[in-house]
Image: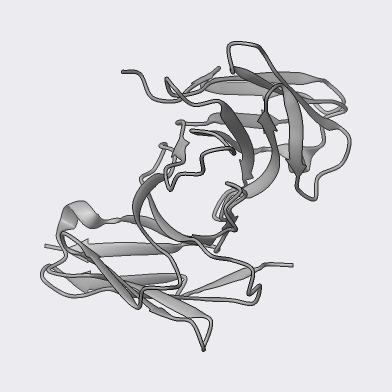
Amino acid sequence: DAGVTQSPTHLIKTRGQQVTLRCSPKSGHDTVSWYQQALGQGPQFIFQYYEEEERQRGNFPDRFSGHQFPNYSSELNVNALLLGDSALYLCASSPGLAGWSDTQYFGPGTRLTVL
Amino acid sequence: QQQVKQSPQSLIVQKGGIPIINCAYENTAFDYFPWYQQFPGKGPALLIAIRPDVSEKKEGRFTISFNKSAKQFSLHIMDSQPGDSATYFCAASRRDYKLSFGAGTTVTVRA
């Protein structure tokens, strides 16, 4: 059983560009959350998707947007990249908001570098 | 504003020692408190979690102590091993999977 997978592993972009990161949740999970982890810091919640809708959002600008597909996979899009967007982007999946469980599994992350 | 404050930033212990990491929170609506372990280049992995109706929870060599009145909780790693060297994060949430993380503690266990 594959865990949470993310692609790509690493990405280098320049300021002003746009980027799309992808996440496939663990089998049986339908809720996907995205986090940004700057170097040497704890992950910061970006937003969460459930039933193809954004259910919760952290304190991130509208440049950060996302999508969830019918198969529960998700994308994170960042427009007009800034140097400060350089970070590890983590995807986490969980069994669902309807039947809350302790388990939330993280993927290995996508390392984004903005030059 | 950081909703969960974690200390120390780093610590070094000898093999067999007991690293202790402390966290404090403000939001009394939090009712789920997990600890995650992260190795370099990897995503965080759930280690152990506790809910506020329990004052202590043990899983293997890892123990969480929880003080609801003080709004504090801590992680103890018993009989620490070099393989425990990692960054540890405390976190808190309501039952909605929106985790608020501490800043992390880098633990080094020397052989």
